[in-house]
Image 1 (cartoon, rainbow, N blue to C red):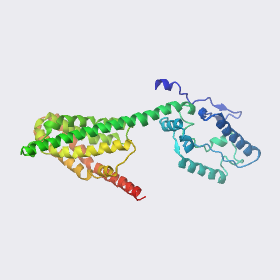
Image 2: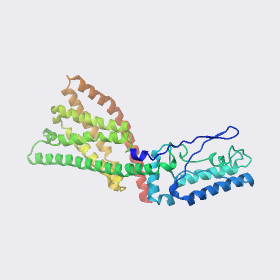
Image 3: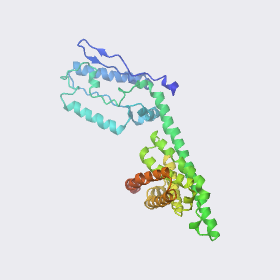
Image 4: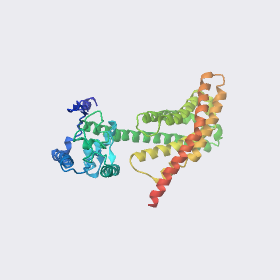
Length: 372
């Protein structure tokens, strides 16, 4: 990154002052990779526009368009990657073809209908080149901190890091978590089968001794999702993520440090609710990163929470109540559990409502796609 940053050139030019004291700013937004013929063709258009307006008294609309993801441009893999990374150089923005076409059409109508527009010869311009700058839709190229021609290589690198390396990392992370929670589920089922064959009372034989270590590891590992959110690797807001995860982490750590709580029968509830939820969630995200979708998995992702989320919260609260009774004489843990009650529980309706809205949005969209 330091090596590539040496190739970045500051987008600063000394302003030009005319005889009347008017200041004009110059910007270099030429892309040499497009070739000299393309650049010359664009300059010829500008020169012809200036001459037509000044000498032939014609109404001339010649506005600057932004970087646009047209088929001819993104067909070139280098331009495609550069366009993918350019938004990292604020305020650069690359637009879809439909958006650019709509805006430019609007500017064309304005130039033709509004006599105050720079397109009309009767409108006085400080400089002939103002014909192109007055209504420019430059997409941030003129205000970017670096010259447009120097951010190409860095944009490609940003694209590769954010769209390739980050995607590979998130895929690996989600698959690792999927297999981890599958392992926890397998240990739980193994415990149930062993005790069932032995005729033991399952409610008296809670499987914490068998699943505690992997459960703690994979649940604590999930705190990385807060980092993912803060770094912009995922779209979820970090505060929502930390509220959801911190409640689980506090609960698990409480069970670890106070073994008596490990005997609570509602441990089965969190194992069932968390395990099934996470196996579906992480497999769904992993597939989504690859661009694939299994409709059944999507339905499970946005439907199981209707039962599993309330079950998980109920089980968590029962264990928390047990923990409060166990550590009634210790102040610090009680404060932490109090925070749990006062923060997570009030947020439950909001989070559940958000998930209901997401369910309606996603499943209705899938239904429309299926009908089409």
